[in-house]
Amino acid sequence: MSGPGEQCGLDRLLHVDPRDAGCDHARQVLHAYAELIQQGDRTATDRYPEVAAHLAACGPCEQDLEGLLRLLNDPE
Amino acid sequence: MEPTETLAERPLDPASAAWVRDLTAEGARRENAVRRVHALLLGACRAELGRRAPRAGLTGPDVDDLATQAAADATLRVLAKLERFRGESRFTTWAYAFAVFEVSTVLGRHWRRTHERVEITQDLWDALPDRLGAGPEEVVEARELVGLLQQAVERELTPRQRALFLAVVVERVPLDALVDELGTTRGAVYKTVFDARRKIRQFLVANGYAVPKGGRP
Image (cartoon, rainbow over all chains, first blue to last red; front, side):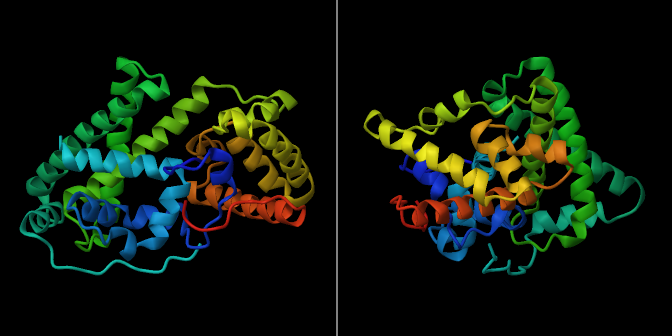
C-alpha cells in the first residue's frame, strides 16, 4: 500500500485522504492523466486531485502509471 | 472516495480516428486492425513485464508466457470497450492502459501460483516497523504503535476488513494476488483496506496517538 512521498511507511499507512477516489476511478482516467503528465502539463494533479490522492496512497496503481508513462515515452 | 471530475469528450485525432474506423469496419479490414492492436499490446506487455520482472522474480520464459496471456486479454478488453473510447487521450495511450492493467492481473495470478499464504504471527507484526521503513529513531515509537495497531485490528475492524488489512499490510500479499484469490476487483480490495485504515486511524487518535494530519503526503 505504499506510494511515492517522503514520509515513512507507518505515517503513510495512517494517511486516509478523503479525496482518494479509489482504484476503479483512477483506472478509468489513467490514460488521460498519464498523457497530461507526458506532455508536461502541470495541471494534471489540479484537474484530477482525486487521482493524484489515490496514486499517492496506492502502490499498485502508481506502478501502473509508471508503466504507462514508460510506454508513452518509449513506445514499442 | 468520490471522483470529482469526469473526462471531457474531445474530437479524435486523425490517428485515433483511423484506429476506431478500422476496428469497427468489417471483414479483412477489421481483422487486420485487430492483428495490429494485438501486436501493439504484445510489445507493450513484453516491455512492461520486462520492467517488473526483477521485482517479481520472473525469468525469460515466464515473461514471454505472461506477456502472451496479458496481450490476449488486453486485446479483448480493448475490443469490448471500444465504444467507450471518447478521445480523452490518443487511442494508443488508451490501449496501452489495458496492457498495463492486464500485466498487473497476470502478475497477481503468478504470485498466487508461486507463493504460499502464511499465518500471521507476532514475528510478522514485530517486523512491521522495519518493513514500513521506520528509521532507527522511530523504531521504539513504532513498536508501541504496532501494539495499538493490533488492538485496533482486533476491536474495530469487520472480519473482512481484518482479513484484508492483515493480508496486505502485515503479510504483504500483493493487492492483485488478493484480487485473483477473491475473484473481485482491485478497487474493492483497496476500498476495504482504505476503510480499515480509516478506522484504525480513528482508534489511534481516540487513544492519544499523534497520527499525522490527513491530506496528501
